[in-house]
Every structure is written in structure tokens, then in C-alpha cells.
Image 1 (cartoon, rainbow, N blue to C red):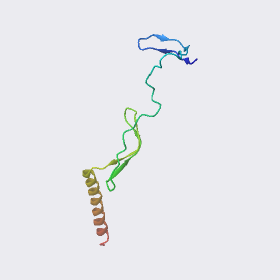
Image 2: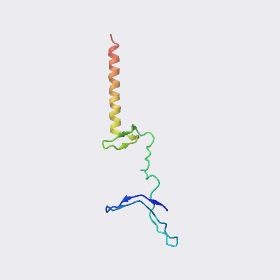
Image 3: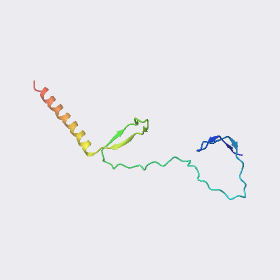
Image 4: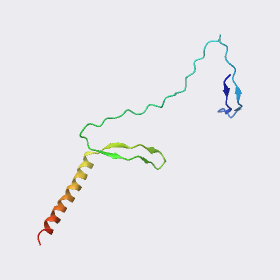
Length: 104
């Protein structure tokens, strides 16, 4: 006989722990929905085309405590241009400083 743990029903009735009696074998089987034993399905993986600029986002926790797994994020064209522009500007300033320091 299977043992049933005590529990509280939705209407507040407390059911004490007890042994469940076996159902008679002549009765028609009752079909009840089974509990899911596998993990819930995840969202499908979206493959990023080769050559698309991406940035890796490290695992972190949101303000509400939810853990976010590490993932790759696509960089928008505007962000890529801004990042490239900042690097180019720094490189030009570096070349100018090197050129000015060489004329003593």
C-alpha cells in the first residue's frame, strides 16, 4: 500500500498522512494526466550568422535576484560604428602625439 503524506487542500482542509488502499483490478483504469518528469522546454537556440559582430555578456544577477546565464549578444550596426570610431580617434591622437614627440 502506498503511503500518502499529509497535505492541505485548497479549501483549507488538512488531510492527515494515511495508507492508500489499492484500487480493485476489475475497475476501468482512470486516466489522470501525468506529472512532467523532464525539464521544461527551453527557447530554441538562435544561431548567429558568421561575421556578425557580437559581444559576450558574462553571467550576472538582475535586481530581482534572477540569474542570467552568460550569452553572446549581437552588436547593432550603430554601436559597432561608435566603437570603431572611438578606437580610430584614439589611434589618430596617438599617432599625432608620437609625431610631435619625435621633432625635438
